[in-house]
Image (cartoon, rainbow over all chains, first blue to last red; front, side):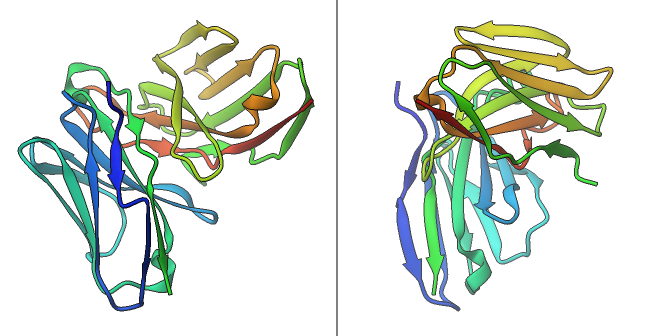
Length: 115
Length: 113
C-alpha cells in the first residue's frame, strides 16, 4: 500500500514569489492535514481538509491557503513568500476521524527554502 | 503555557537500555494519543496510537496514557542504535471534532553502540 506522497521534495524560492505544494494521501483516506515544521516552533498545524472542505485552520496568515480535490489529493499555496516561511511542510492523511480512527500518517515533506 | 510539554533532551543511552519518554498536557479533552519517530530530514513515522487511558504494547515499544494525570509515556526496551531519532508525542480531540494534532517539541534520543 503506497504511503503519503508529497511533491516536490525540495524547493528554493525567492522572497515575494509564490509556491504550490502537492500531497497525495493514502488510498482510501479522505482527511488531509498540513503542518509546518521549523527548528524554533516545532510542528504547527496549518489546516485540515475533509471531503473537499476546509474543516479547521491553524493560526497562520492568509498567505497560506489550501484546497482538496474530489480524489482527496490536496495542494497548499503560499503567496508572497517571506524568509520565515522556510520550513519543512508536512502532509498527513487519515481515514476519517469522524469514524473514530484518528491515526495520521505523514509524508516525507517538502523542504522549502526562501532566499 | 504550551498545550503539550515535552523535554527536548537530548537523551543519550547505551545500547540495550530501557528508554522512557514523556509528555504532559493541559487539555483534558484530548482523546487520542500518538507517538511518532522522526529521523533527520524525514517525515514523522507513526509508532504508537492509543485511545483514552491505558497501556498498549507493540514489540519493544509500550505506550501509556494516564488521563487523570494528563501524562503520557513511551517506553523502548532493548534500545538499538537504529532507535536514534527525535520522538514526538501528539494528541487530538478525536471523534466528530477534528483531526488536528497538537505536537510536543520532540525529544532527541541517541543510543550509543
